[in-house]
Length: 404
Length: 178
Image (tube, rainbow over all chains, first blue to last red; front, side, top):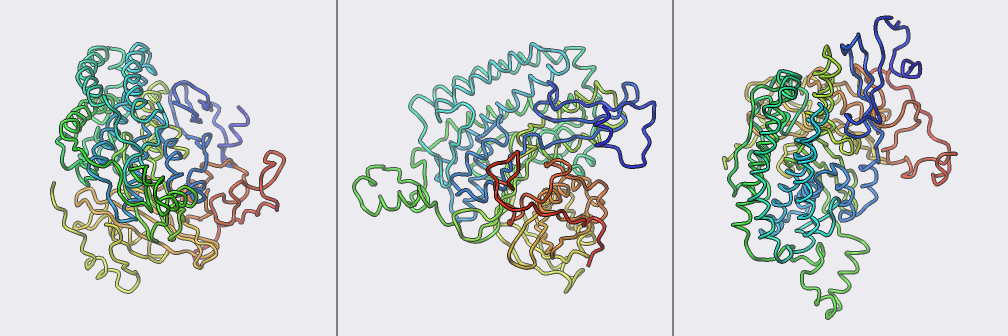
């Protein structure tokens, strides 16, 4: 305890004998990873909360400066590891903007389907984990069952369950495997019923309701001031979704509702996510119906490996380009770009400064969880400790993304 | 899909005139270069003007352009929720880098500025709580600077680090804006 006191107290500030400093984490089941909260408690009342982050800091941004653009995709997987396809997509779009290219339409449909699967997978975890934090263990087990189905789908497309690294600059790595569309349609048929199951399980759970309803209320104005985005912002009544307001890929071709709630409490944030999963299913269904045939990768041998691999075996130039692309990467015109997508957690932005070389001069990740977690300051003060767990859970930070 | 009218910079240039520089639109985002002493005033103007209303601060990013001068930059990305505009503000800073904090304009700037301090040593005047955020207290140097080795400096915990003494951390927080 003394060590904590030294770290957090300013000099000359006397510790009130009534107050207790409590160290929650970095290893604690309700902190969703390695988050350490230094709490100033008056009884069970939280006077002040000071989140200490950085236990998972890997220096993604610094590392990216020494990687080629293609090598950075696996780094982005490890930001929000619950939904890697969204992170891949955000980065790919940013680089494509710098290059002035666009992925083929089929690739865009595939990417959107993947991103929505990722959204469901990310939301499923918190749909289950928030009740678990508050004592209702069952929901998580059911949510994990459905998440397993998504993992299987991702494995079918990419061969990997977690770190998919599936996007490439100018398209995706491979075409969809045979038999994938029926499989994902089967999932879309099953899943809405499962969402109803969760709601039946949780919506009338009196313990869950009394611990989340009216707890951790954030007004719309405060939410904007704290920079919240994604479901956390929409649960406070602010109607903003990048998919609709700054459409990227093929989001302007699909029809979906932007879910908002006015209450701004933990329950509203939970409900927002549950309803968003329904909309994601609708988007995926539309993608399945409308996905066209065609190339899955842009036909530019200087940027992407040729779709027809035979070319490399038969043509000297193609072989040289293939080698060059593997060993050296590709030059990206000098310039700066900021590109944001609606990731499951909120606005995921990549700010890339290119100096014309195959490696970025500077890459900044605007990680939504990093910003969302900060709102804990504003919400948790003057609250019971038990409420703070509900607030933290409902803000849904993923520590890998917070720490970058 | 509704068509968004682009941001008209005349209003902004009229107000600030020669003090700021308009770099035009780059990949869909309007870019302004603002001197450090004007940054808070500029942000407040963008946030509060009824025709602009840039009420959402997306990001603050530190940049090190070593060995070029001016060496440092802070880059602000703002978004206007009502108008659906994005704008990028650049603030060029010398060495040591010092810039007023915008935490008074948006509370969300707090952690972004702490990150820029931690990684680049950019000192934000008026920040309520400018501590390291990712690195531990007592860490020496600013790891994302271009002259900081990727693997860090060699010591007993880091046998693969680069040779050479770690840079001593200058006490910048007390310096005034030049």
